[in-house]
Image (cartoon, rainbow, N blue to C red; front, side, top):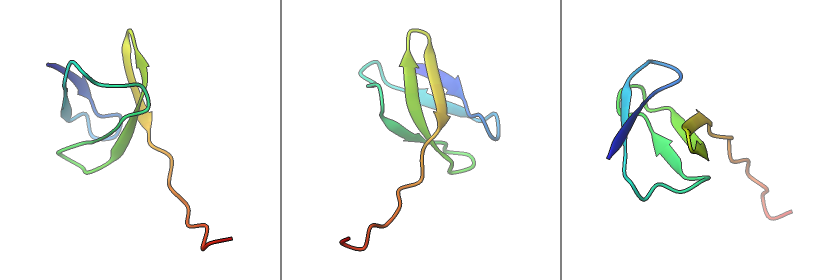
Length: 56
């Protein structure tokens, strides 16, 4: 298991060894959703907002 620092609050996010590219993680301190954008080295960025399409 690894840890990475939250981009927003500097809280520590625990990441399992089976983490996948594109996986969305949530910071346990501030609740921010972060997306895994790199595996070697491990990198995270703010996860994109999911917009409603209202069936269009």
